[in-house]
Length: 165
Image (cartoon, rainbow, N blue to C red):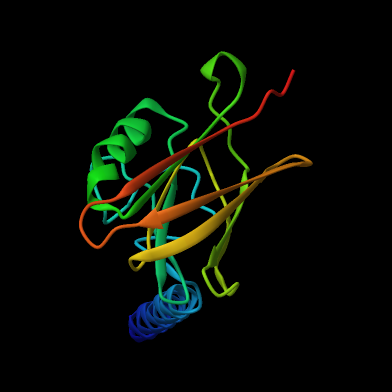
């Protein structure tokens, strides 16, 4: 009987230690990335604290951004949120095909990089300070750039189109 009690305590202690290490490892992993509510490798919005189908909000320096829109829920959520973000970008191809994996570089009026990120879908929303910027977008080997102005009130939209045929 005494042996079974000790065995149970040993198993309980081992389980407690494993859970503690797992939680500590998860906390460390969350602290080591710059996303809100998940990881940048999430392929959907499951477990997302943003809710409503919104993909993960990510941060690079002082700039917040979110990209995606491959599924209909995510697409609707991003379109619905456009008015609350200073910059909304859209990436399409022939026949209004949505494009993903577009490399985006945003440069301020002084030539300094503000953001470099890959879009996970046809929509990218970016929280920028008011000012003038140049958005460079590269899909496969085709580069485009557009000058944009982010107003102090409201936002601006810019659409990029590639003829991928």
